[in-house]
Length: 588
Image (tube, rainbow, N blue to C red; front, side, top):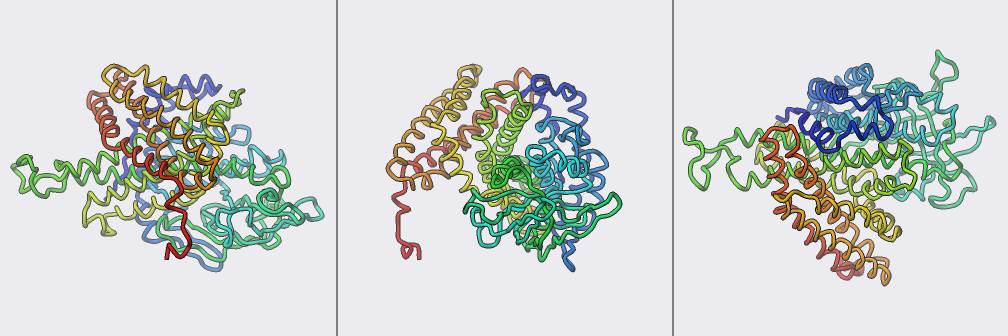
C-alpha cells in the first residue's frame, strides 16, 4: 500500500544546494522569502499536511468517487474537511498577492507544496489547483473592480475557480466554440452555452465557484480571433449577506478512468451574468496566462504521482522475497532473496528514480523562471522566452515520464500490482490523464517545434543550448565523460533542428511528423542537463555520503540507460512524413 512520505531532503537539496534559492529570492526582490529557516518550515509543514491529512483520503476517494444529485456534486468523505483545513492553515494563499490577502511568497516555493499535494492525493489537488490558475488570469488581465470583488475570496480559498474552455463538438480546437455572450443593459454580459470536461466545475467544498469562460460575442471574427474571456460566478452576490443563483448548472459528471475523486463536469450557462476580462476578442491570450501555469502544474502532477508509485515499489522490492539472486544467495537466512537484488527489478526502480528526480529538477528550475518573469525584472524577455520554450517540454515530457514510471511501479509488484487493493493500479490510472488535458502532448509538441523553435528562428533554443554547453565545460573531472556526451548531443540537437527546418520548408506536414519525437528528444537532453548540474554541485553540499553516491549513480544510470533513447527519437525525426502519407483506407 503506498504510504506517501514527502522527500524533504530532495526539496532542500534542490532549493538550497543547487538553486541557491535564498539568493534567488533576494535578486527578485522577495526578501521576506529569503530565509532558509522559513523555507524549511514551510516544507516541513507542507509535508505534515499532505502526509497526515490528504494522503489517507487518496485510495478512499478513488473507491468512493464523486456523486451528483439534482445538479449538486458531492465529493468523497473527508475532502471538504481537508479543504477547510488547507484554507485555515494558509496554504491556499501561499504564493498569492499580498494586495488581496495573499502571503506573497514566490511561485517556486509553492511548487514544492504543489508536488506534495499531487503525490499525496492528485484528485483532491485538482480543486485548489484550478483556483490558482483563475487567480493568475484575474491578476494579469481583470479590471480593478473585478479584482477587488473576487480575488480576496479566491485567494483565501473561500471561493474556488475553474477554466471553462472546450465544448463537446470542438475538443482542443477552441476556434469552434459556440458559447455566446450578449451585452446587457448594465454593460456586463449574459453567457449561454455548455462546456465539458470542467475539472472542479461543481462540488461541495466552497461557497461559490468562479468560472472563467471562453465565449463569442455576436459579430466577432470566426476562429480564435473572435473569442473573449468572461468571469461567470456560479452564485451572484448582490449584497454582502446574500448569494443568489446565476443560472449556472451541472448536468452531469464524467465517469473516468482515473482521478475519480475529482469532479469532471458538464457545465451549462443559461443567460448567466458574466464580466469581461481583458479586451473583447482577446480572450485566448488572457486564458493562456492561466493555461501556461496549469501546464506546468500538469507536468508536476505527472512526475509527482510517479513519486508515490516509486516509494511504494521500492519498499515492496526490499520486502518481497522471490527466487535467488543469479550470483548466489543474497539472504541465505531467508527462503528466497528480496526481489530488489535482481537486475531487472533494479532497472525498473532506477528508471523511476532517474525520471522523477530529473523531472523534479526541471520543474523547479522552470518555477524559478516564473519567479523572474513575475518579478518584472526581465527587460529583454530572456526568462519569459525560456519559460515559453520549456513549458511544453515540462508538460509533455514529465507526463509521459510519470506514466511510464507508474507502469513500472505496478510491474515491480507483479500480479499484486494489478490488484486494486495494492493501490498501484490507481497511480497508473490517475497519471494517464496528464498526457491528455491542458492540451494533449501532441499539441504541446507542435507548439514547441512550430512556435517556440522554428518561428523563433531557433534563437531561444540556441540560448538554452549555450547554457547547457557552459555547464558541460565547467563539469568536474570525475563527470567529464557525461559532460562530453551531453556536449556532443547539444551539437546534434542544433544540427537536427536545422535539418527539420529545411524539411519543413519543403512540406509543412514535416512539423507534425517530427514534433512528438523532437519534444521527447529535447526533454531527455534537458533532464540530462539538470542531473549533471545536480551531480556537479552535490559534492560541495552538506548532504550525506549516501545521498551523494545516490546522485552520482542516478546520473550514471540516466546517461547509460535513458539518454540513449534520444537516438531512437532522432531516427524517427529523420524518417520524416513519408511513412505517414497514406490514404484513409490504408489504416483500415
